[in-house]
Image (cartoon, rainbow, N blue to C red):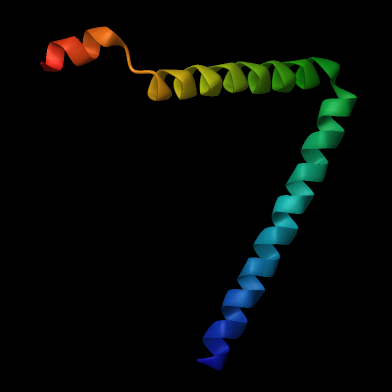
Length: 70
């Protein structure tokens, strides 16, 4: 059981280290190539707008869908 816990902690640490390295590498690439930075910012903005739209649709269901259920 101790060996299993050690391996789990080891792989978790390796995964976190790899994720941090990829994050730093992607930031360096975005700073090196400005069109990539623009594309990432635009994608995040579009995702933010879509999530806000989906949240408003879930909180305020339309009357047509409730009328079709009745």
